[in-house]
Length: 390
Image 1 (cartoon, one colour):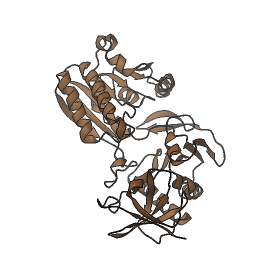
Image 2 (tube, rainbow, N blue to C red; image 1 turned 30 degrees about the horizontal axis):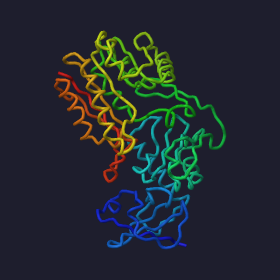
Image 3 (spheres, rainbow, N blue to C red; image 1 turned 60 degrees about the horizontal axis):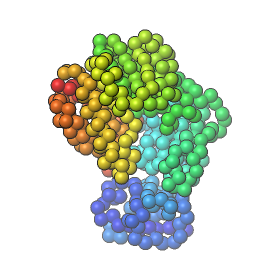
Image 4 (cartoon, rainbow, N blue to C red; image 1 turned 180 degrees about the vertical axis):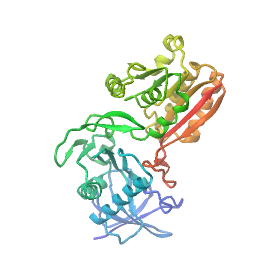
């Protein structure tokens, strides 16, 4: 039986390509679709919109998969989608370790697949996509022939979909610890124990962008995690680098990565609260030429946005106060709800309060394996701005 949903799409958001249909958009349902079922979607004024998977427990009632009413959602469908996603990465010349599927931006809502050398890590973050996991896994095997696949569905967002948190091997077990390369640097990765899918792959172009700032500079990398900006600064010729992170485990791994690359003499790490460090005498007593701010997402929902704005302003203000005239601030946000214009305005407010002027050196975002879909603002989440503080 084919189920139908009639929705309110007055703003033409879904027709323009956004795949999410919220519960308050649904006007009526024909039939009784069960959680995870495929439904046909209609705008009562403009006709058919396509097909998507249905979940009555989620605020996002339907996530669209295709604009065609009669396209089968089967193994061949997922094979075509995965093949198209992978061919895009090949065309864009992406490295051996990259994101293979970026959810909505690749037409596969709530599906994330990362590739670390010949190992894949999979996340199915919504009920409908989780139901298709066997077909997705087969498509990934057919297209990429991985040595192994690991599931990292140990994320709280699944509970909003009525799904449990799970992690583990899909198929045969393998050593989850491996080593990848980024811009010529070696990084240890554990796909079973690292954050998200095991390692953040989205900052590599921004990491490389600090090359002109590094030679001879003293660099403070705040929220260093596994040492991404810190190790790049050391590689590019910094005289001294200190990475800070509140996590002892992150600091330990960052130190290991420094040793892997022969950079331990230049690059050190310390467990510390960044906010406290930047307002303490320790930061002022040891001046820095470059300060990097790459915090975790402060705004994980719109309701948290006001607090996030205050957090971003405060951390940028403290960093500016610790830079000499002519020093550089590398400031990032991975909060999707912190839109680029708001992020810039927040930094400008911080500069005003710190009585500093700013000159923009670089503005970056996500690499091509994390493409931004212009009809889906949520796919644009990463911002990185390099500013000279005058």
